[in-house]
Image (cartoon, rainbow over the protein chains, first blue to last red):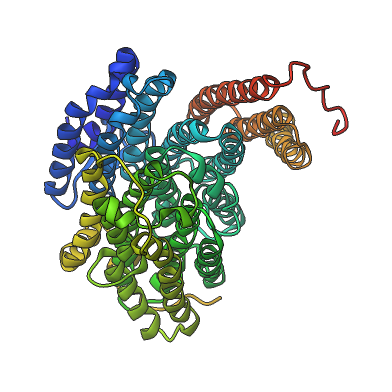
Length: 485
Length: 108
């Protein structure tokens, strides 16, 4: 037994238990929380080259689980998000809440399914196994999105299905061409020929749909904005990250020798456009949850904007760490923001930003959580978002990439513009709405997540060291020469 | 053995044609049920490519076949979920007005 096994197996076991227990499934988090937090701590304490072959099958056939820097950062962050969201969701998805008992039945198994799927996605290097994990996470995500709006859920389902199939087509081409679909073996065997480039192109296209990179983001705002707050938090924090992590693995590990600068700048350009477009759309929103959803579109742009910065860097480890810290910081901050927004909207009559007037006096802790999350999302110091954006900006200026540096700065300003708006309304003088007392447990979840996103800003060096564990050779060593176009 | 070699190419090529047809259908069709079927055509094409590429001269590589079987299981599960969601959506839409919608033949 290894923690790498258990990190995947335990959530799936809890999923089965939640199915059996039905409405009592919510109690499981009391066991799952400590178990998963313990396993995450164990993962962090593993030796740097820790890896595990599932069932001891050797590599061309077997499935390799590996504790590299990506997994060491994202698995614990995912774990913290799930625990916080589950504690927040406890009263909402319990039979006592009244009419919607079917939701109390379905929410908990879906939560554990998504947990197991995303952990497997971060740990495995087998591209076909990644296809299965994508589908596990998508299935849970579609079910959660459909809790808010069935139409939006169905639209998401269709798009996600085509995205996964595009990815599967790429896997099929690779399996036929190289007789293996393991990323570590492909890193050695990959040649820049037509089947490989074609496979990488269709896989990336499919994953970009999953990761909702502009202009393939169309499904995200309606699905994320309509879902109940805990579901929105999981969708925005966890689900879109998996597509990003797989693209990161493909481009910098498995096919580092195949990728050409034109392609990497295409991804970076799409990321830059996503930052601008998502921020402008967020500014234009009148309602709170679509604003937060479009903020996700913008923040995902930074993850891809970093690709050319990693590729061209003299010391690629720095932007590599930056992009992972950004993923973690966004995960924590966005989950916190959706949870806080859920509390705030529950207290007021409408769902418009103008309805939030005077809320800071009525529910100070929820608004504080929202504000702390906003600080990290805007990239104000000290926060995880600041560390990430500072490292990216540093890399961009060092490489003379003026456009990317400009987008980073403008994106921060636009972020401030759309996030200050709901806050200024909430802090504004207005007849304070009468609200019930904030439930201590429910406020604690977004507050903890937001505080962690801020705390990341104080752990800069630790995070950079963590991210460099088991980094692909292209990242660990400075690139000797830049490949020609 | 020239005939089996030609047949070996026949399967992936048929699969590629199916993927193209399915994608075309997915893009031009509006009704979710038709889209779901189109997605299934794409999936069938991909499984044919995957299986066909593993076909050797004398012996067939079991590895792609194992992948195909797993893929079919995933595909069946997701199709069921999609069909269930489409049914639920149709029920929800029919609930206020009891008369069911006429089948959408215009996009056929």
